[in-house]
Image (cartoon, rainbow, N blue to C red; front, side):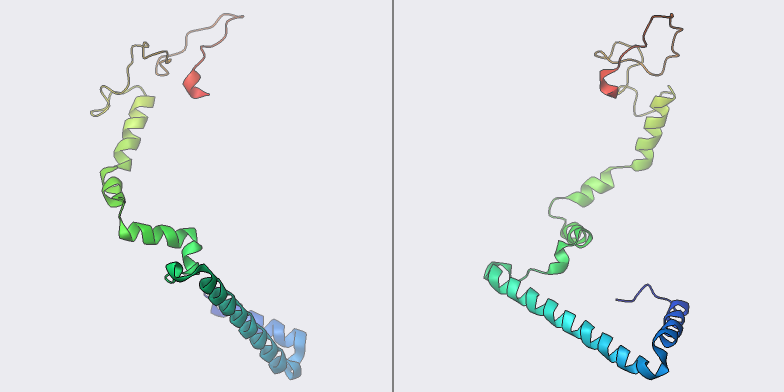
Length: 148
């Protein structure tokens, strides 16, 4: 619960608590706080048990921690029923980024030789690697439908 509190913060909290409540009332305040936390935990556990009993036997393995998206994804990636590890291993982000920057800068990369056409007749697309020509006063720049 308090994993993010370091020793300096803990000392600061104790000093502030002593100054606010005083050394005489501090033990009673600590007991009240721990009692309240214990009641909240008991209420939470009973609510979880009620929900599990209402869901039925199909959900006996149900854990509320699975509702956290990070936990859910971690469990799904460990099972790897969908073959996600194979997909992840087959995707080389550095190579993809290199190909993308080569395409943007107009260089021809080894693997993207046929993926981008530099002739300008690529199915209605505008070649963004060419230098723009000077436009007249009333001329508009070419419209790229894929860019919008």
